[in-house]
Length: 441
Image (cartoon, rainbow, N blue to C red; front, side):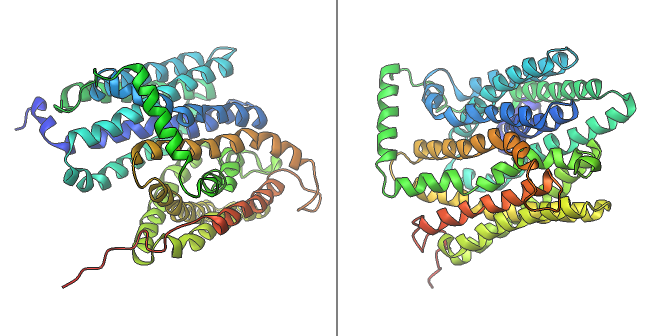
C-alpha cells in the first residue's frame, strides 16, 4: 500500500485537488455570492454593482504575478493561499448573522478573490514546474475536468445543500452560514492534504537574483510589447465585447430563477437552482466545450468563429421564452438552461482559442495574463451595471404588453448581443489557426 508521503510522486494524486481548489473559490465569489445575497434579500441593483467589483483581483493580477515568482516557492504560495481562503470562508459564515452582514461579507469576498487570484498564479506556475512538457499535455484534460468539478460543487452541490438547509432550519441566514462553514472545512482538508502530497520540484524556487526594480522593468517591457502587437485595438475590442451579452445575463439569471412568479421570475427553490446550475448546466457546458474543440480542430478557428458567436448569443433567447412563458415544468426549465449552457460552452471555445492565438510569440505567458485581465474587465463592468439597467428597463413598456422586469431585460440582452457580431466582423485571425496538422505517410 502506498504511503501518503509517497503520493507526491504521482501527479494524479494532487492535480485533481489542486484544480478543484482553484475553481471552488472563484465560483464562490462570482456565482455563489450572487445567489447568497439574493436569498438574503439584497436588492438586485446593489447586489449586481457590488459583486461586480469582486472581479477586480482577476483584472489586476498580472501586475503582481511576477512577484509570486520572486518571493518564495510556488508550493509555499499555494499552501498559504489555501489556508487564507479557508479562513475567509469561515469568516463569511460567522459574519452572515450580523446586522451589517452585507458590507462585512463583501469585504471578505473581495479579500477571498485576491487570495484566489494569487492561488491561480501559483497553481498554474507550479503545474508547469512540477511536470514535464509531455505530462503537462497528458494531464491537461484531468486539470480542466477537476476545475469544472469545483464549479459543480460550488454552484451545484453547495447551493443544493443550502436550499435543503433553508427548508430544514426555516432560516435562510443559518442555512447559508452552515454552508460556508462546510466550504471552510472542505478547504481545510484540501490544505492539509496538500501539505503532504504536493511535490517539491527542484525548479520551484524564488528567483533571488532578480530585484523588485528588475521585475518592474520586465513588467513594463511585457506591457509595451503587448500593446505594440499587430491588430491590438481590434483584439482588445474583441476581448471586451465578445461576451457582452453574457456579462449582462450573468448577474440576473440566478435572481430570475429564484424570484417569485408575481415578480416575473420562475419561483424556484434554492435547491432547484443548485440542481439546474450544478448538474444540467455544468454537463451541458462541458459538452459544448468539447464539441467546440472538435469543430475547431477540423475547420480552424476562423471558419467556426461565426457559428460559435451565434451559439453564444442566440440561446440567450431561451431566457426570453422562460420569462414570457413561465413554464412550471422543471424538465422544461432544465432543458432550456441546458441549451443555453451548451451554446455558451460551444461559443466560449472561440474566445479562449483566440486569446491563445493572439498571445503567440515572445512573452506569451505574460501576454496571456493581460488577455485574461481584459476578459475579466469585460465581465466586471457590464455586471456592475446590470442591476441598474434592470431597474431602468423594468419601468419601460417596450417589448411586452404592459409587463415589466425580466422579459424586457432579457430582450435587451439579446439586442446587446449584436456587439458580439460587431467584434467578430473586425477581428483578424489566421485561417489555418486551430486546424489539426495533417499526417503525411
